[in-house]
Image 1: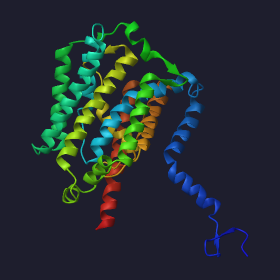
Image 2 (image 1 turned 180 degrees about the horizontal axis):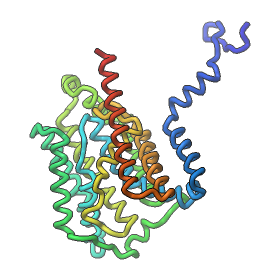
Image 3 (image 1 turned 180 degrees about the vertical axis):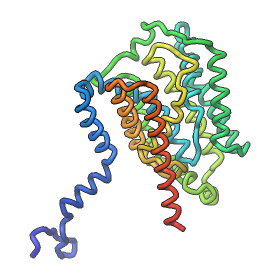
Image 4 (image 1 turned 30 degrees about the vertical axis):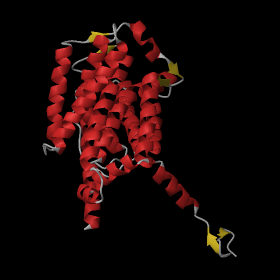
Length: 331
């Protein structure tokens, strides 16, 4: 009798999985965590400050705004689109909130979110009813949002620190913006996994024509996703004001590409239908950790931009090759 075995329901002995197989299964399920641990180990060798509480809190704070943007981007990518307007909507919401905060903070927050949702809906209308490709439609909305941001405020708008005191609270490593980001990610993860709405989004991204034939209300779902993306981008703008105490009309240039790179690092399929939003958020942390390491070693900011661009090219290229390989396997 083989000692490395266990009884099956019919009384026969089945071999237990080997240690190597168990390790491979663990790696397959936690590869992003392992990537971060390798990065953390390497960073600790080059900088003794990396694993300090202050620096880890800083990574999470920097990840919070990009993380909320990545939530917005993830939803659009799941249905097979892109949203290049997320950063510009963030800037618009930030200046709306910062401008109204001294007299009507709640109204400023709600108006900023409403503006973001409206611009997101505009993108959705252009994509669905106007038949404009998502990249062109959201590029146009990006220009509208950025222009409106400068109409609201031609320069940075500071918010009195006393008004933002609640946003400065922290629980160990977690500030209010970080908690907001994690709660939003958890709610969206539940929605995508447990609701018909979420399953519909994956169906649309996997094969829109089949989803329509199966009775999925494709038009309504796409409009809802783009509006939700705009609202989430606006919330990211509010979180940015909470972190920096100011709204800035020109803030966020290039963050739309960062959000795409982060979710692709987290395993999202660039052309829709696949992805786990919690893993995508781990991709945000990995992407921000790379930026943090470059800051710790005092890498020239211009070289940092080059490294980020290379990361974006590599991760998007890998995603495209993976999609092409999967398509070839089906044919």
